[in-house]
Figure 1: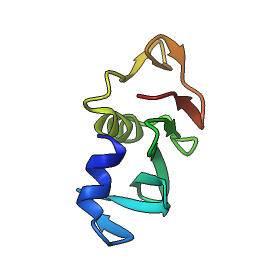
Figure 2 (figure 1 turned 180 degrees about the horizontal axis):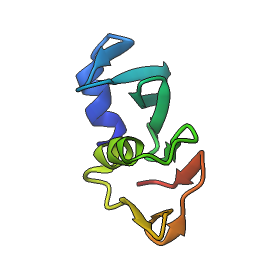
Figure 3 (figure 1 turned 60 degrees about the vertical axis):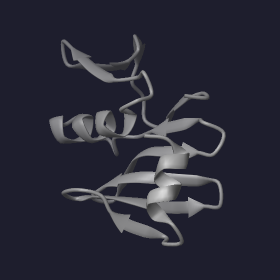
Length: 100
């Protein structure tokens, strides 16, 4: 996913469903969020930056939703010994991927 793909899918809408318990939401003129339940698991900025958040839930569902959002970016959340990481960097709430 990327900002342009999500903006095209939204069109003039502010929000639209995107699979089971997921939706995409325009949160500003320059940012669109991929939302699982009520958590913006990935927020895409028009400049290519992505902010990741699991809402504090280190669940398989949260990880799957974040990875769905990261398809095509070259990034992926992985887990080893219970620790999440993105491209070898320990996952933290609101972590930023620059210019993905």
